[in-house]
Amino acid sequence: MKRAPQLIDDFVAESLRVKTQFFQENRERIAQTAEIIAHGVRNGRKILFFGNGGSAADAQHLAAEMVGRFGPDRSALAAMSLATDTSILTAVGNDYGYDHVFSRQIEALGHAGDTAIAISTSGNSPSVLHALDVARANGLFTVGFTGETGGQMTDRAEVLFCVPSRQTPRIQETHILLGHIICELIDRELFPEAYPTD
Image (cartoon, rainbow, N blue to C red; front, side):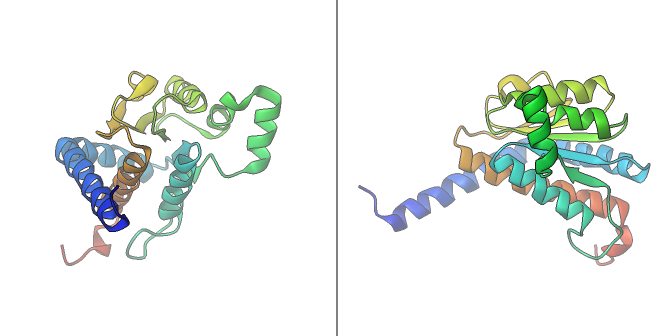
């Protein structure tokens, strides 16, 4: 049996392998996606993040980076997590079923030109899939963060980022780095004066 220090080395090595492969394969798509989102925000549009469990935590984290600040001080950006309002989640879940907890909010808050960022490690979460369908039908730009296979998200998001792993922790570690990179690229696009040394 491996001892804890060796397991730690293995975990870190695998996390680095997954991230390295993912970002080597997706650099251009990440840059293009950030540019599209930044264009929408510049024109008064917003970003809606959603997911379940650990992905809900990522949605909340990334929305906070936009509304607060990611790096240097700058104006607040219009973004929100659809996984944080317990009154909406429980009311919609009770009245319509849990599969509608995100889609109902997109119906209420989403507009053409907004961005919907769906996060699901499996790509098979019904609440996330239903929300993507509603977002696309309403003209939102749809982006998916998922795992190796893409699951049922494969044909539902305009841009789908599939992390090359089937291990939930490794997928989630890459998702948050992807989200941070997109945040910083948007910041640099919208607020170049905040990055004067580049």
